[in-house]
Amino acid sequence: MKSFKASELSVAQVHNYLQHAVAPRPIALVSTIDRDGKVNLSPFSFFNLFSANPPVVIFSPSRRVRDNTTKHTLDNLYEVRECVVNMVDYAMVTKVNQTSAEYAKGINEFNEAGLTPVPSVVVRPPRVAESPVQLECRVKHIMPLGTGPGAGNLVIAEVEQLHFNEKLFDDDGKVVQQNFDLVARMGADWYCRTTDLFELKKPI
Ligand SMILES: Cc1cc2nc3c(=O)[nH]c(=O)nc-3n(C[C@H](O)[C@H](O)[C@H](O)COP(=O)(O)O)c2cc1C
Image (cartoon, rainbow, N blue to C red; front, side, top):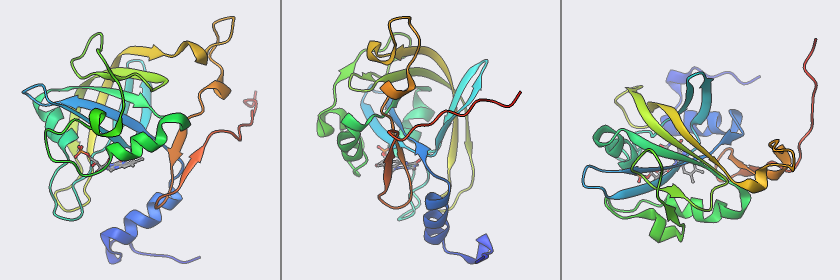
């Protein structure tokens, strides 16, 4: 084994090693608005489901390693504590990647990436029409995990409204895992597609 003290690695090395190792990570395509109602859309793979009662998802917009500034998504969430977490399938992943480019604040990434906004039901940021699952959320807590470059900001958000595309269900109304075709992020520029599924029965 190669062993490393985290404190003796550079931020870039820690990021790189852990992103390869803690993978695959699901991708949240998060829409937010600022206090003037300007829309932002960005992907986050530091993301997961953490509770079903109440339903809670978490994600983390990090401070930029380059200049230690904060991301527009985080700034918006401090102004308007609402978001939509849109899940990402293979058909939309190229457009999702485009939304991650460093656009100036106030630029609407829906337009830049060619994705379609749909009004939400209980929050103000729009949903992404192309996404198979759209989760309207209210932000409960934002916890900075540090103050230096690369530090995460844990966003804890409660899901208030769930939208599932009809194609995800069978005729009996059961969700079918194979129909989701979700993608996930791995190390560097690697992604994976959920086309190699297997079932494992729970132990009794
Ligand atoms: C698939 C994917 C996953 C990403 N995951 C994260 C993440 O978890 N945290 C983060 O800070 N940036 C992540 N990024 C980079 C951000 O999306 C990127 O910095 C974006 O420009 C932030 O936009 P904003 O400043 O408008 O919020 C990811 C990019 C891609 C393509």
